Length: 257
Image (cartoon, rainbow, N blue to C red; front, side, top):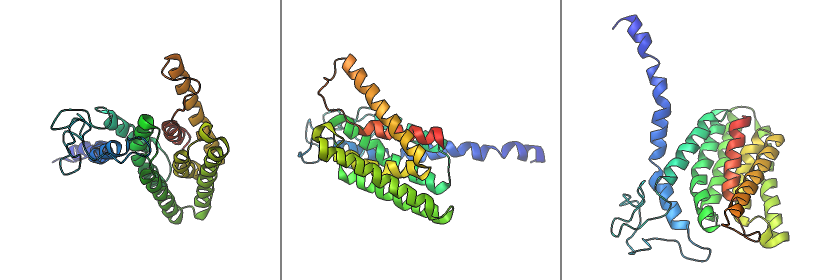
């Protein structure tokens, strides 16, 4: 092979990396779909373990087609969990957000970790207005650990301490609205989700945290007005805030880092 051909072929390996990462991310689709199917039940109702139509078990031992893009029970063909292709599209968007986010590798790993949990959280909250502890706590814990590692490997403890303070402040603020305003405030699930979101935003500075919160509230208001215009909800209806917080956090990280 001539030197010219070697130079021409060299760029193909880096060009393939985004595609490889995308396909690697899509391998977790059955896990994400299982989380949505299991936890998208009203508060107080046991987690879903089988098809609502025929009771056939849902699990990773037989992931297809129930936990695949088709989202259909293999026995009765009833829909299982999230609508077809919704999880897949959300995961592709999450991968794109990670790719477009700046910062050290450790910080981007924290963003990827949080968004992997955020995909099922957003879908569960949109479906049943619920953010399960089994998803919110690991999401926040992983973010704090990965940001701590990023701090040790690079700029030192200052960004991590700020991120920790930001996560605690945002989570405590959300929890306070629950205690003071009840149903009119944010839910405790939102407060737990905010622990990770606030840390990711706070790593980059307090202005980024404020920008992310403002964007999340704006997205929630726009969504609420749209649903009101479509007569899907009333003024007194309680709307899930989790999807707006997740989208606002991701967009802020992409636009400001």
